[in-house]
Length: 142
Ligand code: ZN
Image (cartoon, rainbow, N blue to C red; front, top):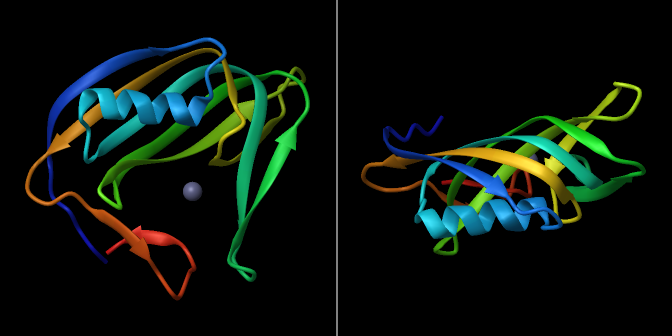
């Protein structure tokens, strides 16, 4: 277990632009706010939905694309550094017109219809840094 102790230093509410890619927009907001470590949550709706599923046996992501328009029931995640840049890691649960939900790892391909994010920056010493992990095949905090 790796523990990184931080103190919340700033928080922002961000309206994400209609038509923007959800992941790109969250990354841009973190960059604008100068967040090197933090937490993110968002709610809203998307007009396209793509989510990643990590195949643990093959150690690779599969991108799942879902037809229709979706409510973002919950999007939650964190910000840390990867290769010196803010890296946004978010998981999404979204509901369709029938109320059923799907979920997964946020990947490019989710088009914002309307969405609002809460970003909390954490301030302290060293930010967690993502590095390749041989066991999982993922980039994890060292
Ligand atoms: Zn993930």
